[in-house]
Length: 69
Image (cartoon, rainbow, N blue to C red; front, side, top):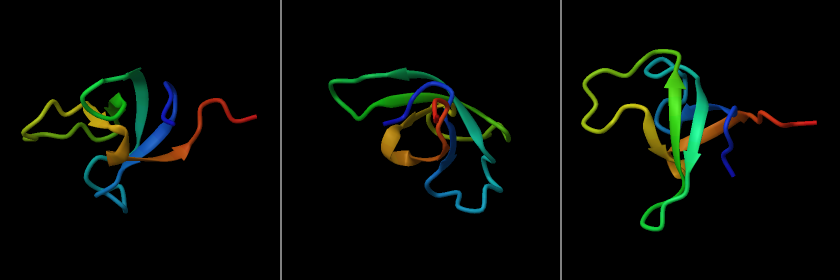
């Protein structure tokens, strides 16, 4: 489960050269979709056909959890 503060990468950006890494700044539960995360990217995406900071959880790979103990 994705949480605020997690470090993520996009599933289609395996080498992190398009978006870079991102920090999840907020999470919204949707009854129509998966969980939706707002992400602040290291490399701000330009020319995307959707709001560039909103992604479903299945479009993100968690690299580091914010609350790991």
